[in-house]
Length: 194
View: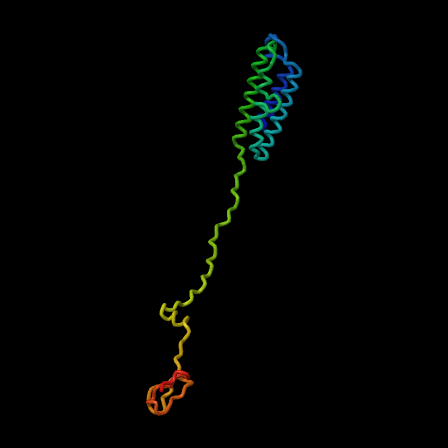
């Protein structure tokens, strides 16, 4: 931080003095006061951002120094301010100021190289769980087809046959055998034979 701060103080003094070197007479005009004010604002900004970057490990502040303070954002950055200096500014002063800002940029980049952005933490992913198996319904015992048919079909009961009293053939239930008929079945009424 100290080299950057010392550099800033030297730059401000150089810009305000408005001269190239102490031995030579200036060959042009000093920096305009409006330009000095713009540069001063940007220098303060670089110092503030650099301190934030180094003290708080704020990599974003380092990025802002490069992308905004120097390159410019919505307002003119240092690079643009220096390129827009009026033509009548002393050439030695112009060169000295430009070199000083390049040194400032190099010092800031060197200091920012040690700033570590916070490690990106990946969101915790819960392990995938296998869905619990659904218990299978018990499979009913399947009877062989023949047994199934027997189960479904109503059982037929044959009428019980009673023996004829004379020892002849069987007489259906509800009908009585006629003696002397030879054991045959009795003919239904109206169908009797002579």
